[in-house]
Structure formats: C-alpha cells, structure tokens
Image 1 (cartoon, rainbow, N blue to C red):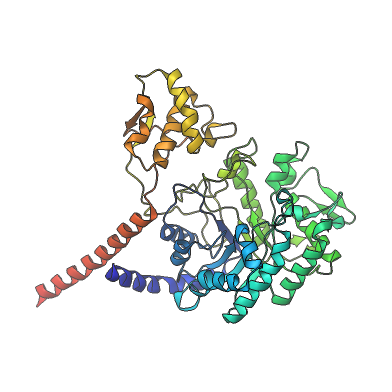
Image 2 (image 1 turned 90 degrees about the horizontal axis):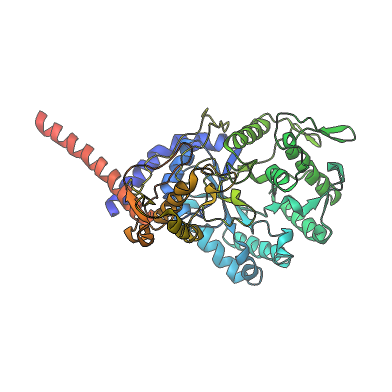
Length: 487
C-alpha cells in the first residue's frame, strides 16, 4: 500500500496542474456534495466526477475525512461545514473551536493540498422550524472559530459564512419591502458586520420549487426563467421569475440594516427530479439550465443589475436516499446525478462541457437483484413490502416517482431489491419468508431503474489503488522487457 500511495501521489501531481488552472478560472457554478446515502460512491470516484465536469467549487455539510482527503490536490475549492449539533460546544469553548479547526481545516490545507476557502457555521440555523434553538450559538461560534483561524494563520485565506434559509427574511408583497424577521434583526446586523469586515459573502438558500410545492396558487411559470405571464410589479421594477424576486427581497432586507452592497452567494438552489407532481426530469432540467444561463449572463436583478451572485452552488450533486422525507418524498431526488454518478438529464454547467459526464470506475456490487418469487402468493408477499420500505428507499414508487405505476408485483420486487442492495446483497436479506428470490436478469422497467448497490468505500478504495498500481507496474515491466530484448 505504501508503493500504491507513492504512485497515486505522483500521478495526481501530473494530472492536476493543468486542471487546477482551469478550475480556478471557471468556477462560478459549484455543487453541494451530501453523503446521506447507504450507496455512497467512493470519494475518489466523486472527485473524478467533479473534475471530469470541470466543477471547481464544492460545498460540504460537514468535514468528512474521506471526502477531504479525496479532494487533496484536485484544484477544487471547498466549503466545509460545522454542523448545527456542533454549534453549542464551539460557542461555549474557544478550546473546542481550536480543536475543530485543527482537526478539520489545518490538517488539510497547505502541504496536504485541500483548498478550503470557507467554513459554513451551521446549516440554516435560523430556520423557523428550529424555533430559535441555535440563535444564541451562531455569533459566539463564529467568534471562537475566527480566533482559532487567526491562531492557525489561516484567517486571511479561510472565511466564515452562515448559510441562511430564505425564511430569514420576508416581505408583505414586493421585494422592495423585504425585511429580516424581527427576532433576527440584531443577529443579522452582527453577521453582516462580520461578513463585510472579512470579505465574505452573505450565503442564502433559494428554492422556487418549494414555493411552488407549498402554495397551490403560486404561478408555475414564475418558478422558471423563461418569462412569466404573471410578473410581479414593484414600482419601476418588474420580476419575471421567483429567483430574482427572492434575491432582491434579501437585498432590501440587507439595505435596511445598512449592508445593501454586501456580496451574496447562493448556498443551495435546484430542482428535484421526482417525488412530487412538479418534480420531474423535464422541470429539473429547465430550471437548472435556466438558472445557469441566467447566472452566466451577468444580467443581475433589478436591484443589482449587471452583477451575478458571488457563487452559486447547485443542490445537489448526487441523490441521497437516506435523507428525511418529512418535507416530501422529493428530498431524496435533488441530484443532477443519480447516487452512482450517472447524469439524469443533459445539462450544460457553463464550465466547458456541453453536457454532463458520467462517473467512471464505480465499484458496483455484482449484477444481481432481489425480486418477488412468482411461485408465492403476492398477497402474502405484500406484507413484507412495508417492512422493506421502512428500512430502504421506496419513494420512487409513490406519486410523482419514476416507478409509480409498475404494478403490485413490480412494487414488491422494487422494495425487496432496495432492501437487498442496502444490505450489500446479503443472501439472507432476500428471503422474506420465501417470497423473495435472487435473479441475474435486470428487472428494470423503462425509466424505473432497479439499482445495484456500491461496494463499501474502504474495500473499493483498496481495489482501485491496486488496479492503478498494477497498471503502472505492468507498464514498467513491459518497458523493461523491451529494453532487454533490444540489448
């Protein structure tokens, strides 16, 4: 393994120089990389996917060691995250902040080669549904982390931000009336003061999809970028899409606390591909392509003409089938790629490739599936469907899902297979009291894909490393034999 590591380091050094130069110059659009999946593609495979698509910015929700190690020397700029659960401890202890920075930032930057640019202090900590749970922790946590960065000589390079949900501000009717929620005015003033003093943007998550999903009276075309037949008129300004209206509502809110010129970055924005009537491949492609074209045009908004957001992070890179479905089944289907890095639809990110490129070298489990045993009573097999779906992801079977409508037998087979793959194809997990059976014939139907799981990252990393090492070794052996033959 030592030899393998040496070879890989050498190959990475050679391959990254030119790519890093490109990524750093063309990285207006980035992605969120979440890892709430039981079928996690190995981080090196995902990093290769990012680089193949020339994605130069990635936003994480934590500081996963495997992910950060894979990002080393990739040329990709990284935002790591302090989770909401960590806020209280860091807010109350400078030593805890020192330890967090040392463990999750200092050890990776510099010679380790991870280009960490931002630390997200919490994730939407001001969300109304949290009922103020994290309000008192955010600013103290930022203060302590900032002091830790100063001690580590990183304060001029790594900036702190707080990704905010769009419900942090509100307006009675039009963007020009935007204000922060009353209970947030003081803390937002403190946050904006810090961001302005340290050259960091205000990070906000904007989701026109949720506005459409939650409000039956919301004009559907206003959620997209093709021009709405229901524009919003605000004095001399006219808004033809929800994104611009939401963005300018934030600008108005910032202006009212004295920071109307503060740079704004979009921490999350996107459209799911299934899980609701308005969540589908066509809509997702239309929204994301419209958004990217809008950002790349530098047209700006009525209150900030000619200026695009500092950064835009699409939500998200990959589907995450372990996410909570409390907001809706669509929560597991935001990815522009499926869980295994396969593009769901054509999309031009504006970064040099006309379409998305798929992940390569994905370490799939063997091509076998678990389906309903046709020799058994389907009625009795149905009893096991709920048990399987309680553990595995079956959201695609429900309304708005790509597998909705495949019939009772199809539903049972899909549920059985989802559980079977989640259990890494353990033969016992396909028993279901004799109602399941293993097949080597792909049972997928049309757009309804019966997945095959992915090997654990640890084992696949070893095998991938060995493949690379053996390949390099084979080249050296061949060169040696040729030299001996010509001697």
